[in-house]
Length: 81
Image (cartoon, rainbow, N blue to C red; front, side, top):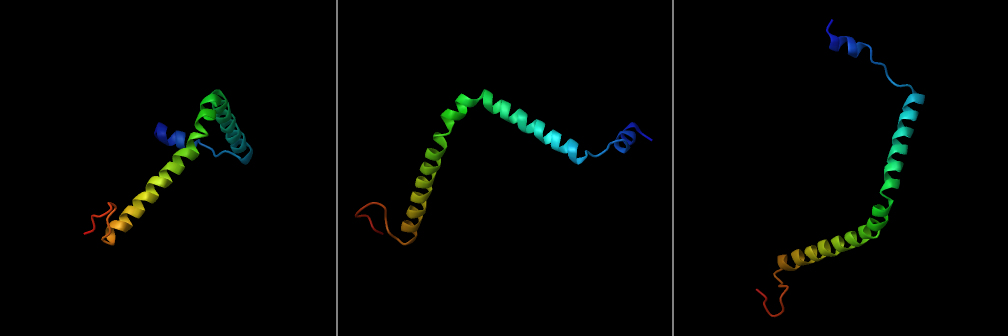
């Protein structure tokens, strides 16, 4: 049997307790990383709603322009087709 076959046959699955510990360790690592970057997070939090509002405004204007041009109307005053 090859070494790959031996290593695959010797692997075991994690139990529920070991899996819960592993997930807890990963959550702790993520929280520690976030705590180290807390100033950046505080700066970025107010920017996200503004970005999404601006994105909604731009996308909403695009759909109004598309609707206006498909009906033959023009967005410029006095220049109908």
